[in-house]
Image 1 (cartoon, one colour):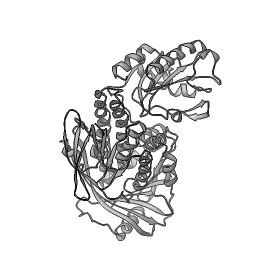
Image 2 (spheres, one colour):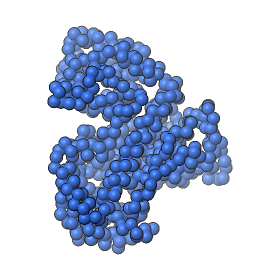
Image 3 (tube, helix red, strand yellow):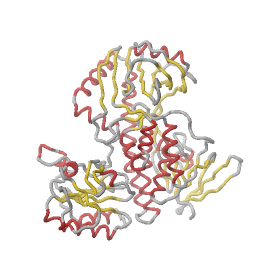
Length: 544
């Protein structure tokens, strides 16, 4: 079959999927029914986990250059600041939220896609599909009315909440409508507020959230309206001036509304992420309240999760069963977001005095205790997303719960399915972040050795694994040392950890190993660096 993958939808999810597949050596076809890319800001918040993905793709610096770093959120109630949520202590080398218009995110991703020789075809409309055991035939309509039958081994619907791919594949999209109405505007305001913090104002008449945008005096305003209000199709400047004065208590003068919109809240999720050889990702998989800004980031992680699995299957380096893990891993993430964003939306729009009192109390409590605040901000930044219950992750670790308990005398270590910690290490190129070392699209095996007599064993494991899996696994030996010992006898990648920080972050108080997947999550870990147990895991997931 000449075409491996057809991607329908060239929004941010489809673009990232196309770029990552291309990095894996799979050149997809990417189509979109819109004649031009989006020009409106739409989703703004780019969280740390997404920036880590962008960094792996080589576009993080470009995104940061065009965005604005936000380091926290100030919460106000009846004109008084009652809490500050700090983001700059999160567990990432990107300790901020990047305010970046979606149109800019898509522009940067589109440039990346095109740099791989993948053309974005516009306007090409997907209409329906037929599929069999070997592939999918998609019916496409071109701008001149011509119909095309496009045959592909796999089809991915990244075509939004109203996805035609989802409908054609027979996937159900169910959920509830939350009784909450909102208006938004990208606008100029001359008020004297910090431009590196999100501002949230609660008042007796409702909530107003203000997000700094790139550029001078540029802000995104979002406010709720009473549930019995008729939503204005194009909210005007006067409405936002009234809401801002009423709810913030500030004498701000608004001007130049670049874009205004209104919306209700529709919570939806598919019953399955896949139908045969058809997948859905992003808003086509699940759509939820924008409170918390998780939507775009979640769609990008859908794409990042699916790309490496699909690439391995297409290259016959893994069985087709591997693709079942996409549903097993991404559906729980989407379901959690639906529940949490629904709760958050109801909480922010409630005018009930008891709810208002509880909201004020919780705001104070959650921001007063550093561990609680860290937990909240790591979750918002999507650093706590994990695949612990996935069928394709495993660990051979005695009493694994101990690795989460510093009081038990064991270093805190990431569990199976967790995001691999990023930490500074010494390489032959000098000091680097570990994520920069793990830059290629393969699995990466970290072999931790803390004592000199163990070095020959680590080298033997490294040689055996790279010998058997040269196209799938890159091996790195990690040593608590300032130099490579002669006894090591290993010509591959050696990472030095002179202060032991990398060992500490991975709970490697003794010899151990971690297998990190191409998407940066821990597929397997073992205390004792047992190559037989590692081989048993690799055979279980059928990596060849």
